[in-house]
Structures are given as structure tokens and as C-alpha cells.
Image 1 (cartoon, rainbow over the protein chains, first blue to last red):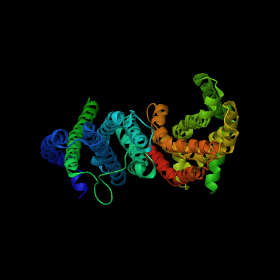
Image 2 (spheres, one colour; image 1 turned 30 degrees about the vertical axis):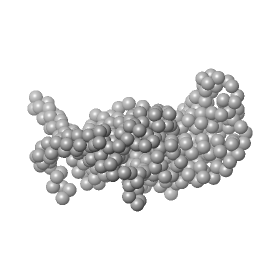
Image 3 (tube, rainbow over the protein chains, first blue to last red; image 1 turned 180 degrees about the horizontal axis):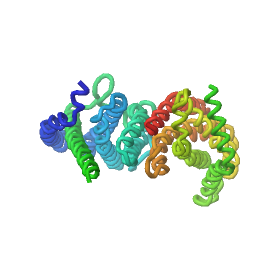
Image 4 (tube, rainbow over the protein chains, first blue to last red; image 1 turned 180 degrees about the vertical axis):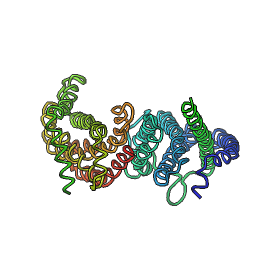
Length: 241
Length: 221
């Protein structure tokens, strides 16, 4: 099963079929989520309209962790089975994940100013999220630091697996420490404690972010594979002349 | 175990023959800490307040300085390849080199730390805890740092890259080390912080040699 999709040509064929679907679902889900979130969902009784930042902030934070976990899985698959596409997928995920992490930190900061009265606090959730951003940046730096690209992917795969320890820390930081950041209200035991009128736009936005990730991921993987082909073709040309 | 001791002895010998090289890490540590009174002003109360944090941060940076050479010289002259071919497991080789790194950099830092604490006017109740926190913290730094040192082998601009990879992972040691010292100075128990530091050390001790060995292996393949 794993190796059926290891063939880049077969993958490229499937990817070109899937990609427009992802693009359209991003547009539709994102449009519906934004409409519900910005216009038809109620304002919070305490936070007023600034609660609407949640519809970007929370999905971005989820995706930041989701991207890192996917990277870790892809890196493990690449290290264990030497699956060429897994390495490419991990490498292609990193910048997307870094952007999601930055987006969640940035929107959180915008949300924090009116609610907490400060742009930034050094509580466990915010700090561990910042560490996640540094881990992404470290990964991107390491992947590109070698003249031989396969060396870069292998070294950085190990780094991703080491850094994965941060993901459970982020998830449980609000339970383990007394943080200014609120505890989980959607993904928790006993069901979400958030009203359906706010939950729906949130889930739509989360889905839109996921399909957006898959869409951009496919573009990046295709670009990476094509880039490799060009590199090999150039090397051959040099060899002949 | 014999192999472990042999490699440890070799690395310690190499370190002692290089003479001043190891002292430079301690000198960096001292100078970095001494910069702070100039930066924030010589006000004793302010210095006493930030002393624990400044010393821990400087120790963390100092122990990172020498990490780049942990595998680099052996990688360049080929002895790392020979070590990997020897019957000793690569994890043991890596662990021996980490131990040597800690003995040559971590330990001198711990010895120098109380002196700096005096210079920064730290409350004397915090001194024993400073030693304990560094004793529990610096081995973790060497262990985690070894993973980074193995990963950057053969890369361009290794040193800066190492800082980017390793410093985020050092943050827990910093947080709990400083909080243990501050707790004792404030008159509280610091057991919880020490247990977390110890747990962190145990976790790093169990996992980092594997990760570092994997890093070395992919570098010499």
C-alpha cells in the first residue's frame, strides 16, 4: 500500500486530479466558514466581536500542530522505509506549518491585546507555540544546509522526531500549568463546551484550513519532484558535455 | 564498558593536550555574565533579582560553544568512521563523547558559577540550589546538544545552525533551573522543579544517545 504511491509518476498523476478538488473545497468551505463566522454567528457576551478572531486563530493553531505531526510521521516513514515521497512531503510541509504557527501566534497576539490587555505573555501555551515556530525554522534551515539534498532530508528527519516531544507539551500545557490562555473547549472529554452557532463556523474553517494545507502541499510536492527532475537532467547534461 | 572508558579517556586526553581551549568556554561564561552589570546597571537589587537567570542563560550559551567540535574534528579526520566500524555500539561511543564533553565544559562551568553568583550579588541561600540545578541541568544540555552536533556534520555554516536547532530544546532546562533557584531564594520548596529537571535528564539520557548516533550514522554513510 505504502509503496504503491512511492512512484513519483503515479503520485503526480493522482495529485493533478486531487489538486483542483482541494482548491475548490478550500474556497467553498472557507467562504462558508468566513460568512458564518463573520456575519451570522453571534458576538460573545463577554468578548464582543473580537471573539471572531477565534475562527482564524484556533484552526491555525490546530494546523500548526497537525502539520508538525504529519511531518514527524512522514520523517519516520522516510527514515524507516526510505520512502522517497515521504521525505519530500516532510520537506514540503515545513514552510506551510511554519506559516500556520506564525498566523496563530499573530492572531493570538491581536486577540490578546483587547482581552488580556497585552500583546504577549510568557505563559506555557504561548511559549511552547513559539518553540514550535523555532523548531520549524530550525528544520527549514537544516534541510537547506547541505550541498547534498538527501543528507539534508535525513538529518532534518531526525530533528523533527526529536522536536516532536514539544507537540504533547503544547496540547497539555493549558492543563498542566496555570495559564492565561484558556483551556481546551472543543477537543476535550465530554464533548465541546462551545455553542453550536460558534462551533459550526469553527469546524468549517478548520476543514477549509486542512484542505488548503493539502492543496498547497500537493503544489509544493509536485514542484519539488519537478525540481529534482530538472536537477538530474542538468547533471546528465554536464556528464555528456 | 571498556570501550566506553577507552573513548572517554581518549577524549579527555585530547582535551587536556589542547590546554587552554577548554578554559576558553569558562572564560566566555565569565565574560558573558560580567557584561550584564554594565548592561543593566550595577544596582545590587536588580542584579540579585536577575542573577539566577543570567547565570543559567550564560551557562547554556557557553556549553553550546564547544558543541560544534564534539564530532566535527573526528568527522573530518575520519576517526568517527573507524569508531563506527568498531565492535562498540555507536550509541556507547556517542555517550562516551558526551560524557567527555560534560566533564570538560559542564563541570568547569559549575565550579565557576558560585563566583559569578557572588559578583551578581545573588542571595546566598540560592547558592546550593544553583549548584544542584546546574548539576542536573548541564548534563541534559550536553546530551541534547550532541544530537544537534551530529545533525550538522558536513553542513555549511554549522555553528550558527547548531544554535538554531538546539536552543529551543534547551528552554525547559532554563525554565525549571531558574525557577528552582528563585523558589529557594523566595523561601519555598524546590522539589517539584528538581524532579522535573531530573526527569528531563533521565529522558535525555535514554533518548539522546540514540538520536545522536542516528545522526552520526547518516553523516558517515
